[in-house]
Image 1 (cartoon, rainbow, N blue to C red):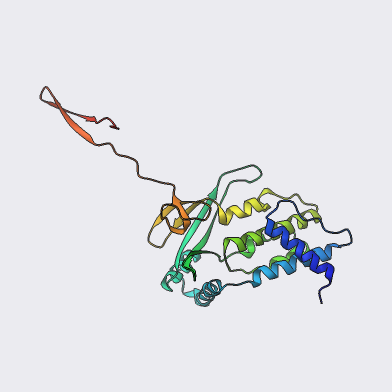
Image 2: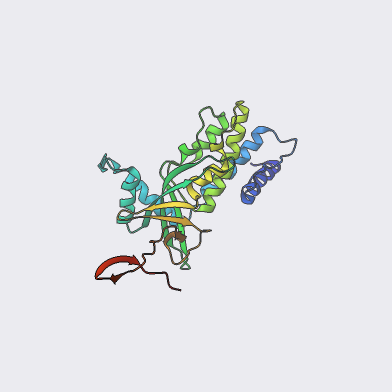
Length: 261
């Protein structure tokens, strides 16, 4: 039976995640570290326990193919192998290769995951992020027992929305910061929530399909100019000016025509 105080702690952690605040919640002085950790654990279990029908369908497909992954060509990327199987099963899937430049407190980096777009019940486009090596992204070299327990709760295969992923990142990065400080270690910039969010939610994303490759930029999750996945193209073909031939004294010379208004 969960006590009233523990329920209050869970709600405080939940509110902190929902607000996406960079300032950790201030817990009552009577709360001990174990209760705070329990609140984080309950909240993570609640987030992971909310699985939509679409997420369940994609996860079941991944697990089905996981059992037969020994058939995969050893020279083929495991992500690309899963991508082909997902497309064979009718999913609109692609591989997203994100990258981001160095910013204040966040070093440059790159990452890769699978992206799936589905049609929702009301006809809206739904985007699911699929990561087949999710848990290892949050693991620490010298974790506290509680943080180890928290990361063990994470699935190896993650299937979920951007909102669900954001909540997990906020909770785990806050717990990682506490774990590192308890070990007397500095919190590196690649363990901050802004760096972790850049892995999956960077605005610069190279979309790789089984048959084509394209560069895209994410624009607030909304489709721009009818582009796929709610991305807008960052690359456009250069304008080629037409050329005309001008004959001077019987000689042909090639000149560029002026750019007329």
